[in-house]
Length: 353
Picture (tube, helix red, strand yellow):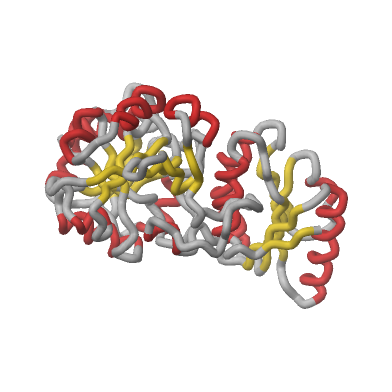
């Protein structure tokens, strides 16, 4: 299979390319497309075979549910049952945007799309290309991140091509994404709104809309009051994600001690003949004495850290480094989401100094 790259990065969007991608979806094919979070790998959410193709292309476990992307709230009503009032409140506040709601499903969406669950995860992306594709195709689009399962999520079309070229029909190249971390996922099937995956929309923002909100105990994001060993609620929460090829370790603590520890660990690794990558901020980068140092952003601009995380992990893959040491990034709004992704990428491998 030859994977077409359709450039829709310029305004106005090339509608001919949107139509071409839409025809692929309607015929059961797969199209990668940009959202405001990461690139998604899309297929018709109502087509069992299309969902099977998504799992096969990614090498994704088939019990790991896919997120259904829609463009109208009425589509959520169409595929759900027992929809709580909180869904409309959250949609009015955050849709289109980086929020995924898990609700009870009806028969409209097959189990092949939901990973065998009686619930379905749904969101409305805030990206003109994604919305145009949903509207033009007439499909609700099932779309996980458009990468090989377990690898860092794609924030550029080139990342998608690297992982999935020859496995999917087309890529809509909309340039670099805005946020760079996957959507917040909330479970609306319980009495209390429950966060299953942290993201740009954090707990405080959710509480302002619906009142009480809790964090699922299966989440790991560096919070001492969240049990890393607790049983995850959603199947996708139990798989290692976002991992670079190099062995990643997160070093946390007071900045001077972190820099000193990483410098020492880097020297030890180099002495063993290993190549080393270091993830640093703009303020600390010049304090590292050896290794390949990449700047993830500024601690005062946490959006820059989120935006650059996956791209940096992929850059280290290109450099073919053996080990990676990263500072910890417990920023005010998105720190929980950033650390959740970093901890998964590191396989929970951390050092406290």
